[in-house]
Image 1: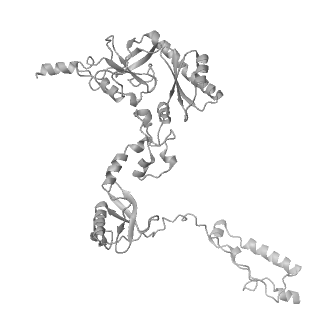
Image 2: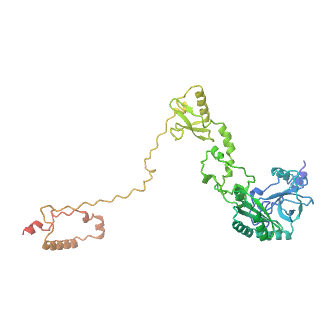
Image 3: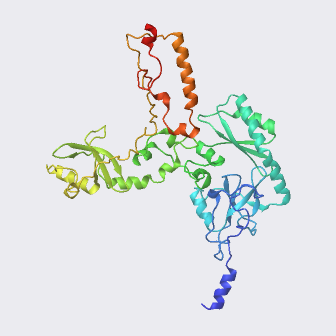
Length: 445
């Protein structure tokens, strides 16, 4: 191939998928105000192959939220991904956006289980400005219509919840999506709604997962909900998926925002089932010379099994590899019992030293220690032979001496802080240097 042909092919090759510079094939409003939805983003891998559009005359069209349909381009219009078209409906017409063209539409129809003999409606034209204005007017009434419909259903005492309302592009038809645990007779409801809104009424029942996908939200993993971002088919989820993965059967943690089991429980369950097939059964117990060990838990990623000497309580737990477990099972079948579950090489290794908290940093109550209060020394009691109350003259003399001594011995401010306080010294009247007259002598005199 010559360089000229290569350059010509590079010029003819589109830089991006047609319509990619717009708000995207997964947008929900034609003004581009709402963010795209990942699960409706169908990338056409055959867009740059010549003749890809002419090989198949059916296109895929997306309407509000997750609703899609297939329509035949009988007029041979030059349609590209992202074009807004008016399609045939009963009655009138509907407004949608083309999300896929070419041979990939045949694969999408096969995936959606569309039968070959199914009647496929036509693409009427590309949407005009008048069609878009009429569609926006009908779309603006959806919220008020849903609130009024809920009130009507409540007045009729119907056990159902109307989750969403979708108007047709021309405003002549409205689809009411509802949720109900039981079968509901809504014939009277349809009559009341038709009289209230003057349009043709269609009721569609959806499940809790479909409602969560239409509303959207953030899951406990911190990412957008799978049902609102990329999932289109909902598979039943059972508690067996949690048991295979050794997940605690806690309803609050296993349930999603739809109050059903999380869809992500099925994502890795097949890998767990295949890994568990290459590990011993949980019902198998191992016999040793000392005791009998029962299955406690599995570590699928490391292919290790933990055994316990008690069936219900974890006691004397021993973790061994799956190969060692199969080896012991073979020995038990031959009537042999090993001395221990661990192989001899692991038994010879030195045991780990027990953990010692030298600094006391792991103590929970290390900050709860209260400051010890200093105990004051008790005052000495008077001897039994002495009078407890001194005379009035002795009291006056003692007080005068204390005042004169306090004036002479008044220390400076800093000196008082440095020396110990005299208040803590025990009062002893018989110590040397005390000029207080003896109480016994004063009383005898």
